Length: 214
Image 1: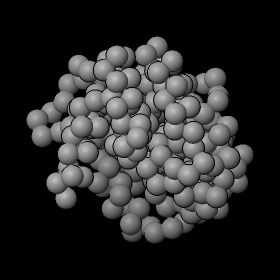
Image 2 (image 1 turned 30 degrees about the vertical axis):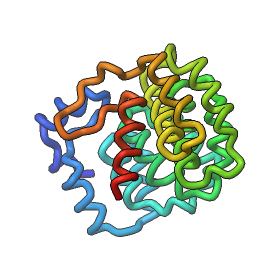
Image 3 (image 1 turned 180 degrees about the horizontal axis):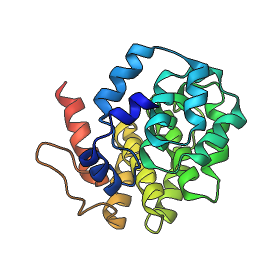
Image 4 (image 1 turned 60 degrees about the horizontal axis):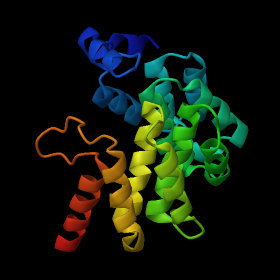
């Protein structure tokens, strides 16, 4: 904890706080510290219990993802209220855990939009890597009905799923683009030069173009 405190940078904290995060540690330095520590499951649990943002990010990097029980991960996600801890927990831990599918189903139906967004993130992973058994048309129905008015984090996750369906599954591409055009979610999102817009019709079209060029 003392070492993490020594890495604290007020300028980094100010930037992070604008995005809803509560730490001031440069992520490159945090990853270097994790690389030095290697996998340390018990230390990871103790760091998580501090409730400190930087400590929790470090915990995620040095934990053993497959060692967590389902209920542990559910509790951890509900405690992970800042965007970066939430995203890293889902992407670096839950996706590698044997309970990921059970949690995906439970979280997708959760009334808490932050929890539901994790369910959608896991669904997007399946759309891309293991679509067998998913009702893609049904997912598009839900997105079409609910994405427009969803809270920001949930809306972002549903939009990512919409784009992934359009990118990966040609038979649903026209409908995915049409839904994006009609709902106009993230249409005006500020996109830096050289980056792809998160507006689904643009995102889908660009990624399909890249695939065709390969």
